[in-house]
Image (cartoon, rainbow, N blue to C red):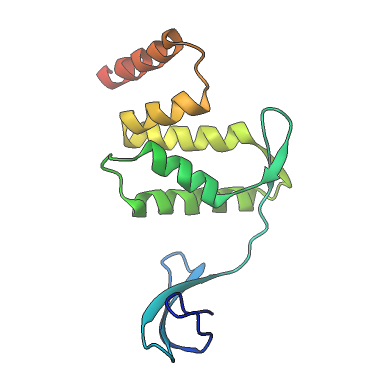
Length: 153
């Protein structure tokens, strides 16, 4: 493992801990050359399905892409990174356990949008506006009215 500060390869592990779900090992390391410490995460490489997009393209399931989309929707909202990471962990696990070679992009998107709807209305609308590709302000207003109606109930 290269030191992120001086790029030296020699380092020693100071501490190792298993994550709550038991699927990741967090290691604190110290660089032999510069003495600085850094954290690495060790995870079993998982076999995840391909995602079939609306236009028929296929691309690998991307944890990073999902996380970035959620982070953009949640920008300046009271949603912690821990909550986002925990959700993406559970989403990844769900699709692994399905055991399918391919999943529809819609299924992934709907799981994300449903979580955001529970967490925060603003984050939900931000994500929905990109995901659902509203054609005009009327469609956008319909979605907002639906949210307002569900909050009153």
